[in-house]
Length: 67
View 1 (cartoon, rainbow, N blue to C red):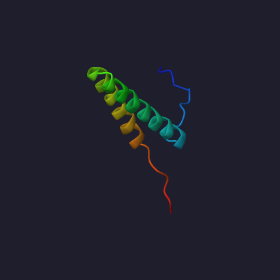
View 2 (view 1 turned 180 degrees about the horizontal axis):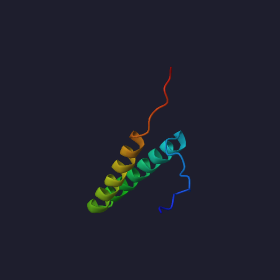
View 3 (view 1 turned 180 degrees about the vertical axis):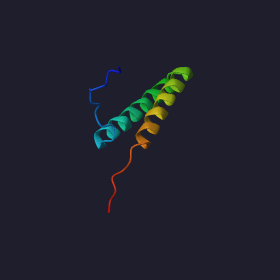
View 4 (view 1 turned 90 degrees about the horizontal axis):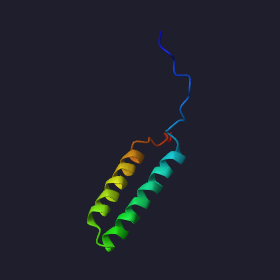
């Protein structure tokens, strides 16, 4: 007999979640810029990759229909 998952997960498709992801995107871009100016190319690439992840995640959210 399988145990059913009764825990409800929060709705990921909200404007607040999308805004949070975009904020993380901006933060990682800023971190990358700081690391580039300090000469840390590897660290900057890491932050650029994180920024791309958050950008793509935010892009998956659907905008509400405006009919």
